[in-house]
Length: 108
Length: 116
Image (cartoon, rainbow over all chains, first blue to last red; front, side, top):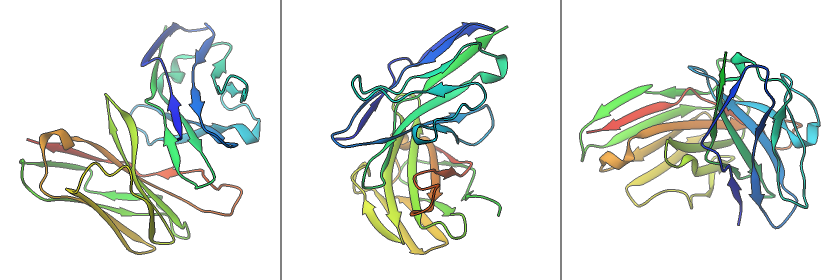
């Protein structure tokens, strides 16, 4: 069964501090992993996907198949990073399953 | 393209009433998804369509919920009768299979439903 777990509902850090948003998944095959972000009063949008291996807005995420994790990291948080972050998984069927979401609060 | 268009943006109704939410996907996209967002459960996939055909409706909570996609440019999610626990934000999203952007969803603004 496909499952995505984000253990933290809320993560609060100070500006300039490192950020790590945790995501663990359960899937028997080779999944495709994503991070989506929802800023205040904006639509949910794609932040990054593991196959792209890119850094977006300073965020990176590495797929660790051994630990079945896809944690989102940023070395220095900015206030504009405050948002709701969702980890998502897609399998062969094309079905995209999301985790419960983590609210990131970056304090000045 | 105006993106994924959902209506209504807000709906307040009374328990027992029928609710119909509407979605227009991005032109050319061939997959359409309905999600429900709540504080407690996050984003739950309700149903998704590929080429207008329902592929997986295992997330539909119960028989009170139904979804249709009569053509490539329109889908509805209906709740009848509605209950207070259905109060949530309902999102529609679309994507294009077989492209480099496969599995990358474009979301609508959502329909916020309140059932009193």
